Image (cartoon, rainbow, N blue to C red):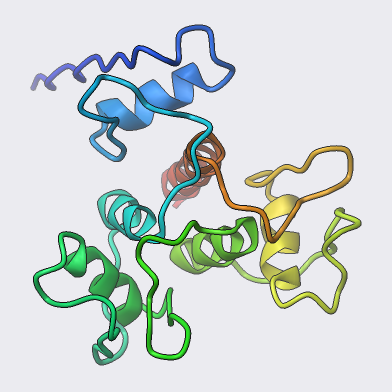
Length: 186
């Protein structure tokens, strides 16, 4: 039995980047894509709609609840299927009936979404001074930090900052590798 080789994906703006290998691996798996001009734009923030699409590609999500439509995501929206699947899987709820597809994902939101997608048991202690136990994302951040999926910078997580495309890739890369390790142990 032979397996097809992974396609090589090269983006013109990641050569020598600290996350080049992670970006290329997820791109070769078809999980992430770049832009029409051949760039990846690693330092741009990632939009909520694109996050949903990437999660749909990366995880086998199962609906656990009825679809509740978002008033700002019509069925003809380019990423409707991905957004609807994340909502039905219990991973996203939106705010006031809206998903805000073009808004950036914050680091705290990303922590919650990754923890729910991986079905990680919540617990632990957040090592980040800017995520106090009273912050709504504390349990998600603590659990992912304990597993090494999320990292901070000088003791800070910056939970309300937008996630950049490269930060998103690094988190997804570590999350998918953890998922693979767990699956191999079973």
